[in-house]
Image (tube, rainbow over all chains, first blue to last red; front, side):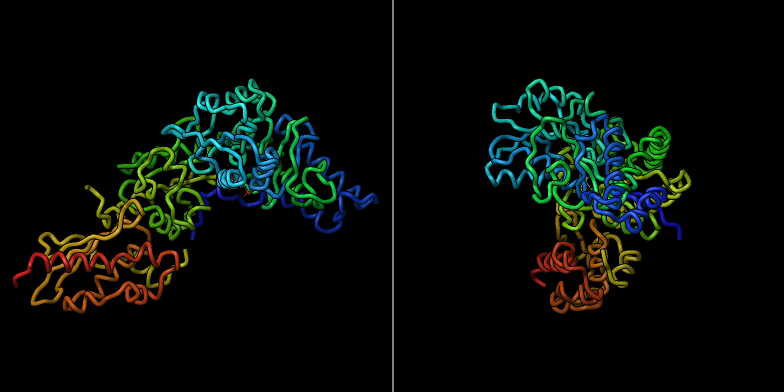
Length: 383
Length: 125
Ligand SMILES: Cc1ncc(COP(=O)(O)O)c(C=O)c1O
């Protein structure tokens, strides 16, 4: 059977070129980057060149890139590292990834204050709200670049400019946006930025935090002084090499990738709207990631749709993969003001580089019958 | 979600879907806000359920339990039908994943509601 993967916001397959770049660092080039002998220096050079590649991609300097175990750790480091005394105020949004929201809850329990800004019906934070929330105690503003569920892209440059005017550091989680929308940390007034490798065709368990020079961040992990003393532990050289290769491929293919993704996204959304009634787009109509189509289908429940699609070989997600085990309605969709039953009827399609127009056509061929079948069973239909 | 073959069969080919136009009893259980809701319609003759139909808004497990309750209840006396438990429904489906045992196993309760509706309408008989 055909298998079509439309869940790239959850994770992506490692690109073959990325894999090839990593392989030697498991075997003949296995050295510890801290060792002074040739084996170590070989690994150290690979690390330095990876750091330079990631820095270049963001418009940052090499000393500003700290490699981590992924997006979750980068988010934790940015937040917890900024408020080591557990005193002070953080401004964030109500639709952040749990890596930010749960960290904020933790900091609240330790004594910090947190403002969770609302979003409008399209999922946008109002920069004016950010400015009004600032107090003399505010130590950090953290607003994600693009949302993982609905793909809405926030006005980070404007928020960054406000933060900079008030002398407050600004962090953004760019785990979903990197490679799909332009990022330049200087132009956008970003002081810290989180990246994750496995969302961009790199290996899992590796990522980075960009930290602007001069910003003081307290480590989460103490030890041998790796990563400029901010993140101890022998570096995951093979993973970092793979991540850097994925970053460089994302930059190389940026134009063609985004054009391809936009085409497939619009084909999917237009096709669904043309063939199925009572469907709505979740998230912003234009300020959205090129690979995100999140839609709600009235009167039917998401998991039932997901299972029917899965049987046809199509992999999607309901809301967010991390929350689907809990079965709770997505906090992001609720924050948009969508009713809980409509939240339950939402499906996220996130396509990727390797998906084709034929695959989207196949989805469009399968979907109407599935929705019709479930609506025929549903007591809500027509009520 | 790991579902048994029985669950998948009832999810993909639900039995007795729909409404009975002039039911002797009808009931619903669940809440669309929680993501699951089942309606059950029954016809009763001489104290036995002679026809039963269901409709479900919900996940795979909720649809499968709705389908299964119609098979378990048809032909039963009202007392026998009232004795069908949530566990009976889950067992008849060769089990449900633990997270689904509570939130999506609504069909037995929807059946009780339909029987009580019938009984309330037929107090004197
Ligand atoms: C917006 C966002 N932030 C953070 C993360 C966590 O990244 P990682 O899986 O690398 O820990 C994810 C991935 O689910 C994400 O989508």
